Image: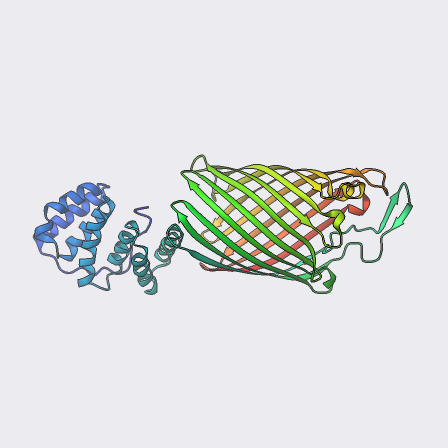
Length: 439
């Protein structure tokens, strides 16, 4: 982290140095450039009393001191340089780095932002922004932080009601049947908006509590009966111990269809992430949820899910990261009767995974695949069989960072639900553009 920042800049304003001092400065510089920061610092120490105050000496000595781990001495030396040459942004960057290593984040941010305001070369500006991002993350360990996310989507959904294409079905009890009008696949353009806020509060080293609230709205251009809204509150406790991160969370959600509550949900979950190496992490999760459907109590249920996963960086061009998860679940109806078993008593198993490529400093491409099998316990009185569904999906997302706050994404996804009940078979294609702001 000591040399995260490239210091090739456009301004060097060191004062004229006498020949004797120049020789010592050159020797310090040669040692430093050869990779011997400790030797450069030791040589500077030998001449410190005689030469401190000379900007050329103070600069080389200060940089060597910081890289040798003597942060305070290096900062003092670079501060002396800036007193004489306040427009020397090369020195200001090294001073900001020293403040950063001393974890004096407010002072580091001020110096970095001063250089950034001078419109340095693009490569320097990008490195400064990396430092500023790290500072924001590091500060979260010591003080409360808040964030805001705004999303705006515009897209096309070929099946806004997740319904079958054909209205016709065959029942061993009813014979040939036809679904009511409006119960088959309906496509439409839609606009989607999401506002999310979060607050993180440290309670001890490596442990912090979080609160997040999200408001979601989706409006279809013509099929407004299938407009959706959701309000979600999440409370969490995160614990970091060495390479293990554990998160406990409570979530409450109100989901609306056509502006009326369709489902309420409350859940408790725990997930963990263990770093095995610089390239590999393993994950695990367990969640318990309770679902209520106003006006459709037969669907009320308890849902349990548990899974494991892996994240691995591949040694290929573009630094692709692959990820995969396997999980099982069980949905159990609250009511103990045959009707509830038909719609809300099922065993679940699934797989999901994907890969993300970095196409450039600001652009990434992500491809995903998912499969889930649901086997219901109750026998349908209409089809005289137990329902079984296989749901599969695939998607690709291209994301571009416009700057450190705004991003633009394009997404294409397709999904299919294959079921032994004709009325539950459907296909769906979605394409959308997303504009996101993060603060």
